[in-house]
Image 1 (cartoon, helix red, strand yellow):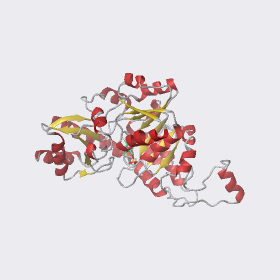
Image 2: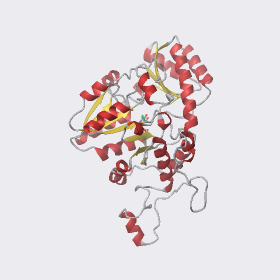
Image 3: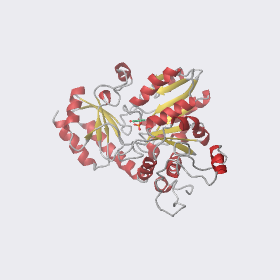
Image 4: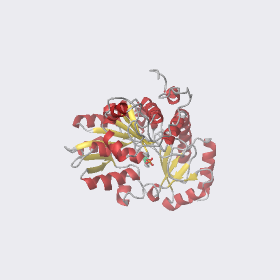
Length: 394
Ligand SMILES: Cc1ncc(COP(=O)(O)O)c(C=O)c1O
């Protein structure tokens, strides 16, 4: 990969070389669980970490297919290397288990994906890890909630599902000051629009299930950062066994080749849909980082080069009206997940964020009337026409 190449060129080329065995142009799927050694000495050297190479697919560095995918995302995020996982949640779990221990404090954005909330609030706390969920869009609140044992600051920005944005650069400085690690879930923005490692984060996590894969046909996760950070996860990765399968790694490689094109279309479509919704008489409120009405629009402009494909909004008439809308769409699919080529619509309070206690949800702005839409790459006029006909039925 040549330095200085533009983002789209890197999406297509980074991490990939013609297969050395037969010259296959496309990175092959190494669908194997184990690797044959030339002799016993070589096997011993590889297990001792004294010779580079593959050993067994659960163990880092997994397979050449995984390596190509990791190198691609690392190049796009501006990281040195990475590690893949069977899901975004497995990736976040591995970071937490690798870098937190009993007595440590984790400070997290108060609006995070429901699974992340459950992991932090119900599972990590069982092992004596202290967790605070705070409004990380407010720097004073972040500073006030720092503890002497704060070891990780975890941000989700833009946050699922309120679209709240927080200042990665400023919070990175706070983390460095206290010797904590800054970990950013970059699932919504993708490296196409936001590169947290270049803004001071120590690691980026992704649910590859979303925009990285891009086609709603796989579950996967990845962590990217400096070699030291990723190598520090080896023990947890190797012994908990949550790595991605070779076929998913290959699907991710294929997905990323069009990431730049898909993200531009997701983003321009979402801007059109957000403007349509904001002007609609039946809509109460809209949150999209690209709209001047978004509370952190200025921060979004500073750290993002595009605003992505996710929008949340509330309809006059609240939850019931939202249900009617979701039951009336025809082109959009009523489904959780996001980042697919097609438009998906869902109700976080009763679906993706059901496990977040209702008082916590409301305090963080995950109100009962909130409808989340993942705007696809269809033509925006058709998405708007579908929403319009559904709104007419309310
Ligand atoms: C922002 C964010 N992070 C992490 C996850 C978890 O990803 P996965 O479903 O791949 O485990 C999700 C899932 O929706 C998410 O939206």
